Length: 561
Image (cartoon, rainbow, N blue to C red; front, side, top):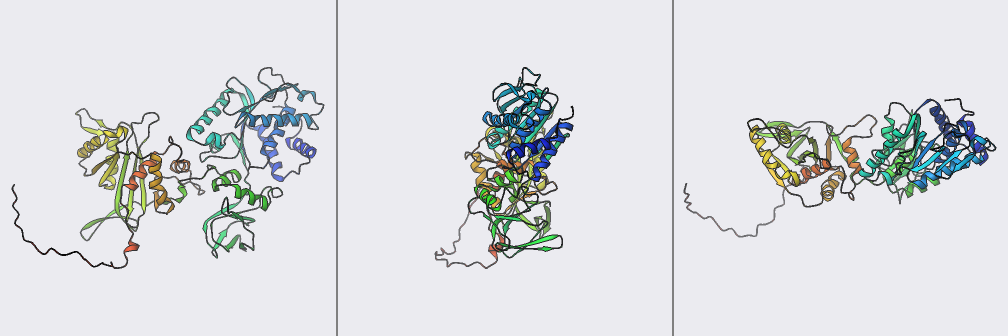
């Protein structure tokens, strides 16, 4: 690549002066990042909060690329929809027509074409266009490009359901094949999903990444209590309580006190709140004043919406019905002990009074549910411990040459039953589960394992079953999860597959990845609720027995054998 005629920062500052813009420091940083990447890199990811002029900067950047290399530039710009993509096309044309360095420059003067596709005079291309703008779901199979850019292609419209996310990724994969060798690819936007495609892009080997949050430092306190001292490792400049209607910007000295303690800061709230967020100084303080941020906070319906659009966290914009953060992780294993001539099972210091095991069989065919099992331990405080979640693989049952059962999903399930001494297993008999009970009984007999087998045919809609069983224990803090089920990386944010499925669960969608939740729901409801020990500390208050006593009757019984 030849040396640019001018740096992008200088090109941008000239345009900003022409427009009368006051350039914030982070815009300078973005300019330097984009230029260095375009000259030296291949793939880049730029993430900026909403309202921080990322699309306006992209218009100027496109014009700079065309100004410096008009002969070879073929830009493919893709947005959420065709009209969204056309905005960038019009913005780029506006810069080329009015920028001080472009006025009178014949090589960047528009030669032909309309908003969707157009050429400049200096372009040597006759087929594809200096710039083509398309929605991400529009066809571009026959196109070729030297610079591909995806501007906010991840939105609620394209990531609202698993099918939409799969379709989006399929469309994006086509860009790999239409790119001219050595082509540049730029991703720019904000996350809108728990499994954001931007997280996948960050993992690429050769990718340049610049992610700027509205506030560099943040601290969230859930169930914040008044007069309690909270420690924060940065100087809190901004604070909010709540989200949506009723949310409030908190003023230092009026709503909370803050004082420095060494390298840390101590804050004390004057009123309790469901959630309080503390932040450092914003990257665009002149534009996003406390009044502006308070208004935007009030208009956000969920914390996820705020976190994703302003703090760049990969979360669904909508509310999470089954928030996995309410599950309590633990890592101990149950132990059998003998006391007073009886066996008892202990999980740490808690006595386990029940084990439930649910199996939802599946043949593993395309679009069928996975064969999911859930093992739940119950204590007499009402806590439910989701101890194991296994997806059984292979045929439901396998036989040896003599016709004896020696493998399959039922054999794997027997291993689980034997390991945890499960007294009973419940099998959902919908679909393929109709013959699974007989196969499991045969495997239990072959393994010489005593375990009851209960068949259950579900008629209630799956989503209702899941909500009815999980929502109450989850919000009440009664649902625990073993660390073997989740993967909690350093940094605190849990990105395990199970957590993602909980976060993505939508009661309005029938086809989604919810099999682990379905088997867990069955295991939880399979055990009767128990009144905790805390309710049995007082002696029973017996009521008078008003029923008459029939007396003692002697009777002779005659049994025949």
